[in-house]
Image 1: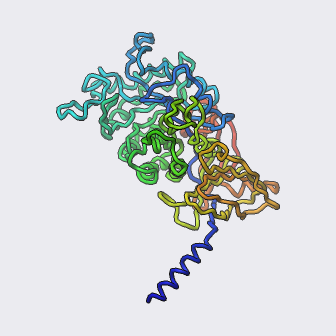
Image 2: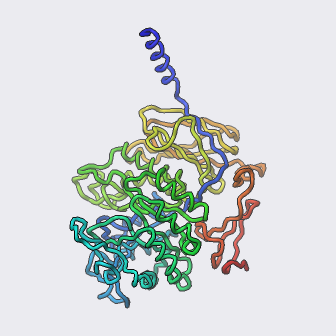
Image 3: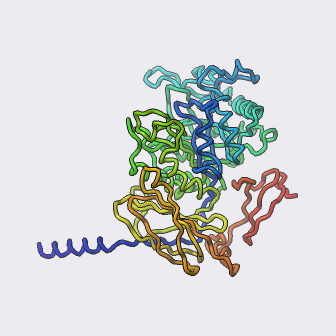
Length: 515
């Protein structure tokens, strides 16, 4: 028995030593189109940047190093009516003006700005104040929107849209509530799934989409992306027509759990899925994240894509564990200079610079992938490019054998292997002698990799092979706005229509009638 065990052990070690190749098979099964990536306009407990526009200047726009395109801001509850300085409250840390300078830059660079209420005005609520309530007080009143004020909620959101428009910012979307399932001591408001449904079904028509064309409604954003919040909305035919995006956070629930479940019904009804707040390793003290922690962040981004996410919005934009440095020396030399890009921003750029605007397609590895796996992958098409993302969290380098659905003729390897700036997003050409559907590329140890291939279409068939098929039949036409974002089947204004034959055309829509 001992001899047999020893022999088996030696064989196992030999097999493990020889297993240096991972095979990834990419197929032309299409999933979601990715709207983009972003962060919240703050570097503290919802403290907006004010006139300091360096963070967004570094992070946003296609010509930036990072390429973010979605910005989240708070719709604070201290505005009550007429647009005056006294009502808006310039002297408070919670105001609408504080995000305007950053929002203007994001919009000028073609980005998306959306607002999230932490609380409606206090006078609309059961506890009479913006605070969520003292959770340690057993006699505390649950901070909820009073039912007799439901009809005031969307007109209040309209005042936010009016104010931002007066400052030159056309807001793209508004949410119903930040974390409606989390009782907090700061600004907050509780909703049950049933209360949210009643609010949306009976009153969402009051959101002024005529005055503010293109504005979209985002569902409440539960703490752990609870599917019961969004599923209840989408299962109701009246409420469903008002909601454009379902959203949530990942606290306590990884992407391939609740969010993946919520995305099923969202995909059925053509709704986007946005992860609107989370931070990885934000509890670290007196140091920057390790490279392993950065790879965990990369895995979260990848798993969000695998779950069906169309928009990923990180928490603080500026923090020692986020994208831009705070200038505090206690967190290390990389953070000592304020408004400097941190390694996590470059990790994000693998997705924000290249996956934004793409359509995810199927990618399967020859090993087990998913949460807590040592290897993860995903694949995308974008124009005439085919993109493969691969993450190796081990100390072992591999050869990555790629089996692709179309021939490719050239490529670029973007590699990140460590926190030092010199090791972030190094670009190396991939030599391809002749167009091929199968090739081997390097997968270094402890690395994040993006392989971008140019599809060979010289004979006119390359792109045709990537036609969007489901069960052998082509999908129905898809309609997008001019920023490449999917829209409903009955939008207004100029949109892009993707037809079944793979061609696109600009078309004017008016309600359900094409003109």
